Amino acid sequence: MVDATSFPSLSDRFEVTGVPLTVVNGTARQVGAAPEARLTALIQQHFPS
Image (cartoon, rainbow, N blue to C red):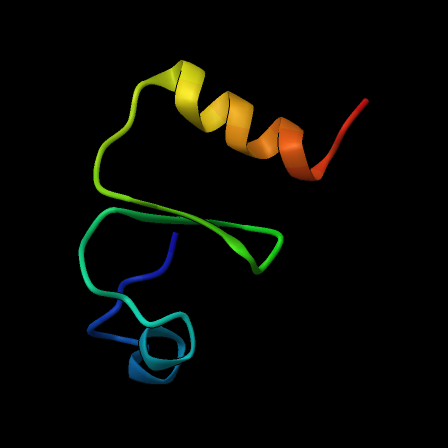
C-alpha cells in the first residue's frame, strides 16, 4: 500500500485517478473497491498456478 500524496512520483507513474487503486504486475488495474472474487481473478490472470 502506498499513499499517493506522500509518493507523487509513483502516483504519476501508475496514473492514479481514484482510490483505492490495485495494480497487479505493473499492468492490470482495478480502480475503486472490488469484491474479493474480482481481485482474486485479476491476480490469477497474471500469476496462473
